[in-house]
Length: 132
Length: 118
Image (cartoon, rainbow over all chains, first blue to last red; front, top):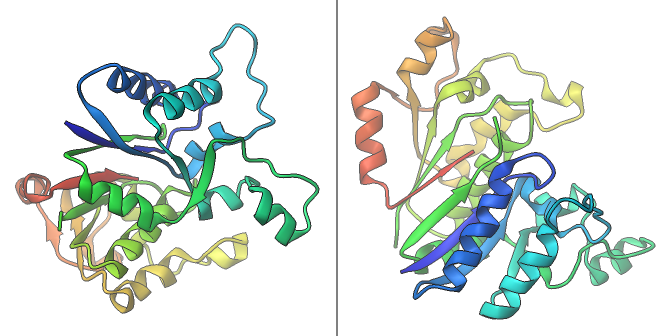
């Protein structure tokens, strides 16, 4: 089965951010596959390259990067959600005259159209939501 | 083309979820994805009239809601039970579409290919 994931959960606040990662890791070692992982809302925070999680907590960003590498899968952030949270890539930082890019590779900025296309080609779409 | 049901169940200004639900609905409509928007739970508070979001320095949600038909998001519903739970009446809200009872909400969930909650 082909899965598309939508991650809305803030990695610093919501356990579902870890659930999303664990689900993706499980898919990566199964006969199933991922068509895409899209981060929206506070979910984009996992891509902030200056994140410093405490040493006794798992580094979600590094684990996502490994999933991306193992599955040759892009990790895409909703550009509107990312920009309003200060997550910019190199070109965007240059355009806005900012001192540095804040987005960690391999995460990249993308439009909602990207997610909607992933939704169309997946067998199942799973949402990992924000705590209410 | 898979159909999409977006459930908007967050307060209008408590966090960014309500705005993200509308962004996603408008993007889907622009790409000709058959999209339905359901206001449920605290999401019905987005429908209260007289909002002044711009005084908070954020987007005024009621103006965005009014613009939905212009963005071709035409299928909008409101979960009736969520109104009663908050002592709201249909007359006290600017309803973007018909009220559904619990059974009709369940039917909507069954017929959608993909459901996203915000």
